[in-house]
Length: 640
Image (cartoon, rainbow, N blue to C red; front, side, top):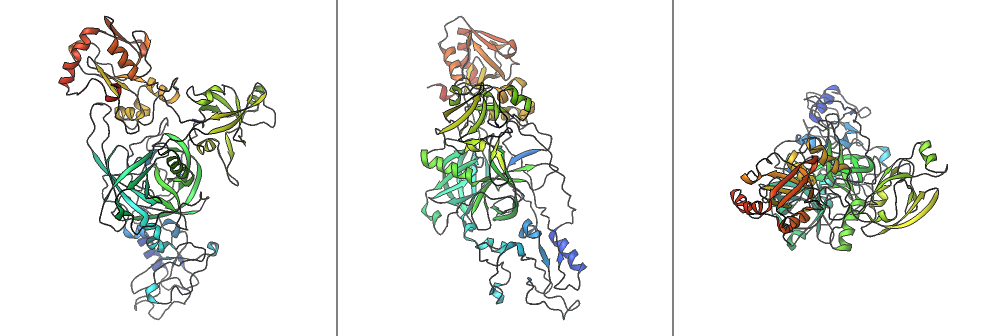
């Protein structure tokens, strides 16, 4: 909530690939064009990976207006089907395509039988076989092992370099590859339309990787509403039952463990690297659709900034890469050229004008999640300052609010009533700095050399319950406060965190608490277009006035004689009961159960009212429950 809505733009169109545009066909074309090649003039080949399959995500970004065909999706594979590129498509990564030589060592006798290669050529050839290897460029600054090609047994392998980097062909034999696991999950989602029961279970496949202390990391959306989770190591035929230790909804990370000691034998945990820089090479490893074995895709870091996390409906630091991230890649690690994990694959951009735009969760976010679990024994979340703010780029605005020429900052628009900052900050205060980091007029702070980032990144590096020093300008005077940081308490929560949905039934009228999963269940993944305007306004702009406040609605009316005339009331907010404002669903249920007035009056949105005779309404409820096979008039959480 610290960052204002980000401007959206359309990515530039990429050239389309013809149906016959594959590595093999291009190689053949280049081969035909150089029937008599020489070592001094190799043919360059451009590689394009066409093995991309899309998948619909169950998570939709909160409050984001999007055009048709423009969506950011989580990449968990649900009921995978065949697809993907050919073996030749998958063997060569995109990064290798930037610099590729075509040099056949042996040609058939019909062509150049007498021609041979010099000892410096980077090709291993066989008759009628063309093998492409990456050219060693000067900018890479490495030295190949001089004894690499000393015999036929070592041919076909990329070199090991003195700086510790690993050639692309050696990835399959690297120790960190054995730490990547396949995650099998059976999900049983709640039925928000019929909250007294659950939906039919379904299965999904995703990826994960082993870290120290006998733990496995994967994505939160990969194990959401899990009934059973199993993991399988690379090259193994055994699936091991896993236990979910923690689920971080905001950061889309989950932590698992396996009790069977056999699972941890002969495996080396993954080491984490530092935050990568632009154009650093990354390799994404996982089990996407298109096959059952492990898959490797390569690319470079394209962008590093505060990114919208679709599953968590929040904004945290994210890394954009151009390596393909498909369904099933979710939870898989992204490695740098030293074999260190620099991120977790978790979502990709699907748009008709965009290709190979994937996102990984960077190591600062991963480290925060792990440290949070170690410190508290559970996941407590990422804290927020609890404000909405406005840019101060207009000079007249700065002058009117008393800012001096050298002062920079952002204007506070609103403060969350449930946030600790509510005691200290006010509307129209100018936020000058956070933890001694000066905030610019556009809300950014220095990040790295030549880079700036939204100041919400500084807040997200804190832990729940920690304090931050905030400097503000109020009425021309500079003030400083030490403010506690807490997690965000939304009026319409983005998740119910594995709990069954709450409900209360009276005379066939079903009352429920609104959440983002509820809206998605009622109106589909485009709920931000199709849901009632009043509910969307509450979702996007309303703030909780107390910690336990909920948005209570009449979900539906189970038709009976007692509720005749109210059948068409659907998803309408309950404002008050018998003149008392409704704070949450449990508050409403307690008031109704204890009511001794002759009539029950519910004040709804749009100035509607529902009135029932008290004794008749309570007497009719058991029969209606029996008719619809509903076990109880209220959910278990309302009974305590």
